[in-house]
Length: 110
Length: 113
Image (tube, rainbow over all chains, first blue to last red; front, side, top):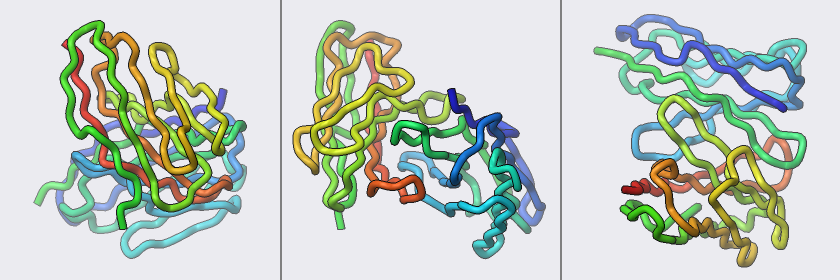
């Protein structure tokens, strides 16, 4: 069974701080995705990483895919209240499904 | 641009009642999914349909049935609702492929009393 484990589960920080959240698996994934979900809404895709060792940047967000394609990280620089939300990693299952981790709930206080 | 549309947005059921959650997408996507989201549990896959005419069980299919009515529509049915099915339900769709973006509806908040 392919599982994606995310840590930490909760993170509460002050505006301007940096943070990193993690997505780990014992299985190899051909790609991983990161989604952000705001209260009352469905998740929205932030990025897809497909190559081991790949680093992608989206403004203050930096995403990395592990060399062995079993893990990924999301680093936010100088967090802002608008970054508050649930961050989910997801990967393709072996049968055409899409597997999600349990998420990291981030709260950024002004 | 409608994207993925779910109905209803809110529903309260009594134990034992049945209901169908509707989902439609207008992006010509082959794959469609039903997830439930509970606090601390992330998104758990109930059923999915990789293409029109096919459906497969996900992680938590017990107590649910699905119908892929056509390429646009994928419905989820609760035949006899139980309090354990109180959750937020999300429908999603995406093009075929392992790196394609999944688009989600706004969710249905279901309470079973």
